[in-house]
Amino acid sequence: MYIFLIPLIIAIVLSVFLLPYIIREGDRVLADQII
Image (cartoon, rainbow, N blue to C red; front, top):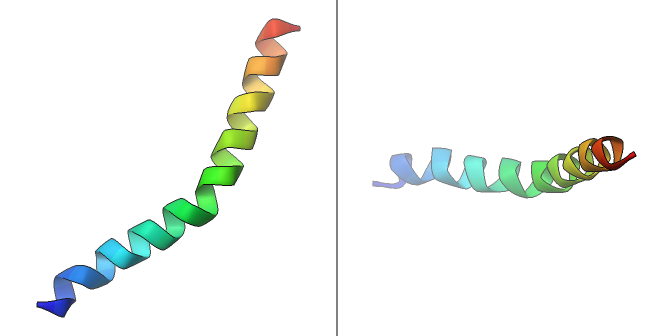
């Protein structure tokens, strides 16, 4: 049962670490489009 939870936990941890990077990249792209 716990085997199915491991990829889910890994995905959540990765998303938490990657979200700030993705948001920063998105803001940079939006800023480039505005400028």
